[in-house]
Length: 421
Image (tube, rainbow, N blue to C red; front, side, top):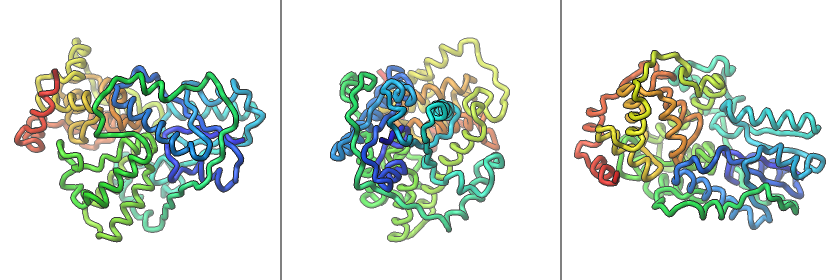
């Protein structure tokens, strides 16, 4: 029997764990997913998208006689409670990049050493694997542009194959009170309008096909990516990427195919550019460890916070700062679980550099509410915008100028300010 510890890889397409099992012609496998934190602390939109993603994966596994078993316990505790340490031949999982998740991996590895179990990890969260990098991790450039220039030539030689498993081993006959019921958890969520984002691999593929082949919006991505109102202004791939319902390599392959058929331009390149940014943040998190999540960050900016920090923070969270552009973006986050990249940069700059609050408060608020929460991208971007990360210029946004540039008729502000109360 095999044991898969699913993490941010909630998919069948381009999942090396399932490919490995298929090649092994394994008889059965227990699939387990550990919920990373208390769901009651999450915003309703993030929670709904997450549970939908698990639910869809179950639908895909059901014809194979399998499902995802979920719980709050660490995988080694599940193995121990079920008495499986002598029945499992191999444990498979996808390697992570941040210090919090790596500690969980170490705990499982320690358990496997004690129990003499075989454990196998797969490097598939990023577009480039660690082995693809043309330098050791210790020499990762301190800013993005040198990183990009060093890795871009590699792609002339790389080829990514998206694998779809035709057969998946069946689930062994195991029933346990340690596992949670996805439908029961989903039923506890209040009804919200989440037509913008529906969780699951099939929805991620649907979005991918739409953006490239139906709307052809990828042809103008660079010009529209800062748009605030139209759904196709940007790719919106990030929610499915965050949970691994879409892999970055699947997106890259589709992008290359689109360029072969329709031609490449600056906009199609810019989608690739953004995938490289995602990789860079993950490699940064791996290089700097716990420091990546700490207030001083990679740099050590001079930060002094006002005495009424808690009050100011609550106003920021609820969209009551008095800055219409900030408040509209914060309202969109609250009512949709989403905010544009342009909005995220502005509200982060406002929190850290206008009202001088602890930037980690903002990062945690985003972590709670964003449907596309990704640890490395979220915390990396927050550190970048606060002056604690890898921004070489340590810029401060002029919020009024930004609003006039990207929302000149105030359409976006009017729409979401009207939803505040």
